[in-house]
Image 1 (cartoon, one colour):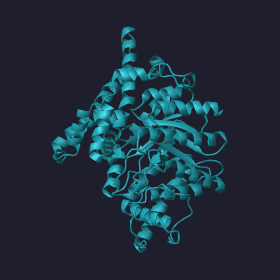
Image 2 (cartoon, rainbow, N blue to C red):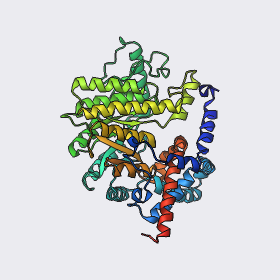
Image 3 (tube, rainbow, N blue to C red):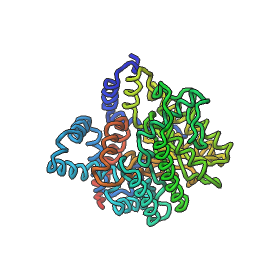
Image 4 (spheres, rainbow, N blue to C red):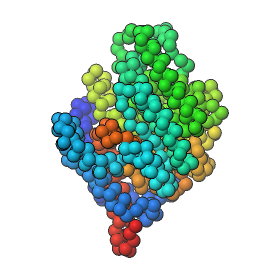
Length: 471
């Protein structure tokens, strides 16, 4: 059966069932010796991988990953978090405390800047770096900006090079409705180049011939004077943040979001990169979602255009985190999904984009963050980097995983001499809750990776128990 013909809800259930069939035998098969080209990253030596992890931390991580990979537990937890039970103060307090001491502590860096700082120091001692992700409220753009600015300032009090990036979402500093309007107008201009956008700044290519344009089926009205003012205010917020990052030498990484908003997000990102990425030093990074059919072509176009302008670009390469919602949105409008038809096509796109970016780094162009939990992609990128002569510790190459996920891959890449960061969201539990829910709903595909982590963790725990090594 063609999976493209399945309703989105059925597709999601199919994916859950598929991911749930990953067995320990399958995991152990994954851990068997590989071709010599892949041995740059060694995941076989669990003692060496987890040498910097205490026994108590190892035990807690194994238990939490087990809970997070249990379909019934995740479904029940999501039902509770979205139910009216959360409207009862006493019940809400109990639930939030339970979440705080389980999933929150595992996947997040803390509730305060002090707790986040302590987390950064701990992972820095373990040879990793931190990507600071400040929890935001989408209804308070100015308040969010101040939070981002404090985050940049706070990062300078931490050990040198321990913070690799500040992560920001454009939806935090610009109203979502306005981003949707700007995206509609830019999509229409791509369809009709004579369509004038007087407010538009110089940017890089945002669309390709395969980009999804179905979000804008009719000619949108121009921005009102009030909307143009709001757009200017949003630009000012981003420029203030960019200037602070330039001043403190903290790279700013802009996250990708839904395709309905992404054209405006890329517009903000690229116009800021043209202004602030200078002297061979990319400060503003954009994000490419490899699960989109147009990802590779758009990456090539943006990178080449930036090169012609003499602008060094930084990109974070991800697979993508909004598969269910993107498929449902396209289906509701009668269009094919903008996402590749199979996971193998997504893997191929990711690896092709990675190869392209690695060649540019080897030639002294661009910089990249390979955000991946896929072991094969991580090993392949590491192998390609070595074959291209990219030296250990090259500042233009970074690998990244979510905090609490893919620990074996993170430590394996670290042991191979690469820079590795962990994505560290922090803030009050109730503000970080959307992030935790999204991790649970959209990243069920990471189940196989978490199984590998758990198998290796239990092996190391058993070894420590037998040898009476406790810390």
